[in-house]
Image (tube, rainbow, N blue to C red; front, side, top):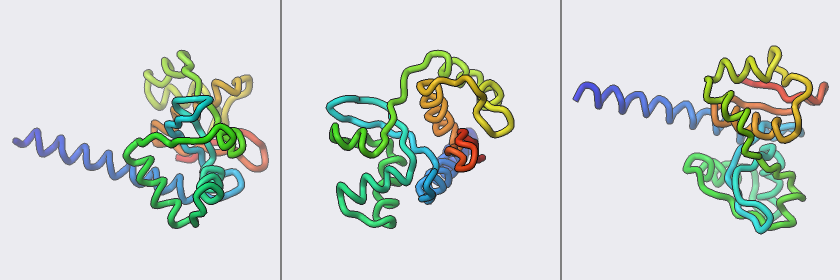
Length: 163
């Protein structure tokens, strides 16, 4: 019984950290906002995609006419329960949804742990040079899975970590 209690407390703690992370991500409406990683279904693509939170808000605002508060309620529920977002073809490109490829190297590096992953792809908090767009998309999605926020730095244009 003692082990079950410890396990339940551990799971509750992880869920609270994930909730805190999601709320941080969906509260950023800067021009270059935090990336969201989300399952999407569209006629042109089905799978994991990344999108900046501000772009995702504009998608909801323009397609469903909802304000920021309602957006945060809706998207929080979707991200928390890992629901799939249905997106029309034209909306997929118009609102900057980016496909996350199944990059085996990025996946293998993620399996080695968070610290190894960050050391492999980042110097200080910035993404290293010579990373392809596909790798970058997979890295952003994996950072999100690790509950690590990332966004494009407005001055340098580099992907930056925000722990």
